Amino acid sequence: MFAHTRRLQTATEPALNWEEFFTLRKQRRLWERLAALPCAMLGLGAGAAVFASLPVNPQQTFMGFDPLIVFGGATMFCGVLGFVGGPSVGRI
Image (tube, rainbow, N blue to C red; front, side, top):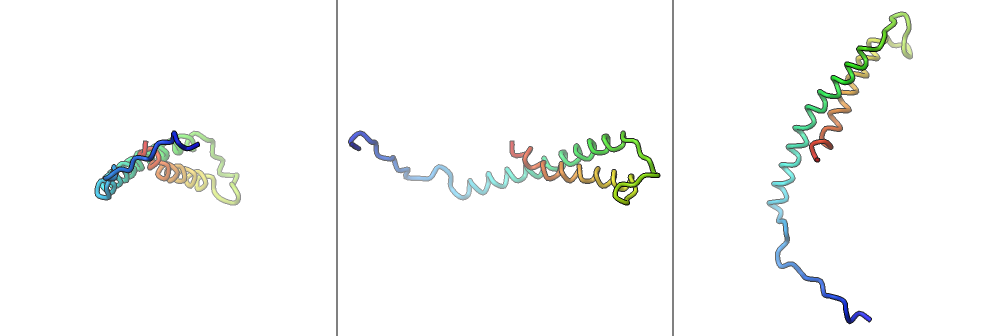
């Protein structure tokens, strides 16, 4: 029944040693960190463009907060979201 199965070839040396692994990991993390900053700026700019174009009525509040505070917080959140998502872009 198992007469035609092949034996697994055992590698005498691993394809990647620890030193190469850590070098590649360090390089990947550097690219992820470098990609996080432009993505944060892109998110901040996109959030600022969207929230700056919305009409603001100072007479109305959002859950008791001034609309400028809410829009400023939402703009900052867009920048943070870009910063968090940046390493995923740098991994590609």
